[in-house]
Length: 201
Image (cartoon, rainbow, N blue to C red; front, side, top):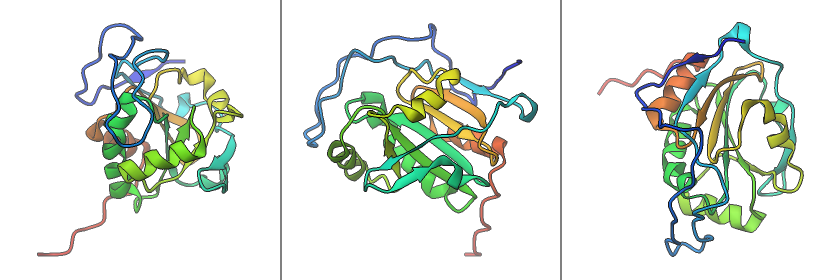
């Protein structure tokens, strides 16, 4: 299978993985940012042409409020999946940008879904409150169902962001912190609806 790669202006860092420089708590009540024991992304973006995409992803999980979420309920929309946990320093860095892109694209046939890979519901909820996240996240630490479904796309780096096409197939993957312009480009290329026309001033 041939992979098409576009960087959208984001320079790729050398090496596939590395350890994050040790961080510290920002006094927000969340766990201290971890400086080890997880893989940092290399800021590369991979895109798959429609004819190269594999079978639709299938998984379900429990949202932070206890609601059951099945990925198939989002068929017909583009879906952004973002892996994260509260002690991940890069996840904290990108959280406001993800929320901003979500606000921009939520009316453009796009759904965001976070995949929390480590925390309890209380800690994950605290992260959502701290960073004003309004899209849902599921808790995947116990079942691992979401990460298992993504295993062929190398989601080990935290964070990793995926864009699924309207059929539920992976269309693009960004490893590490994803810049807003990069994620917007991934969504536009995957077929997001045009931005609503602005009313005349």
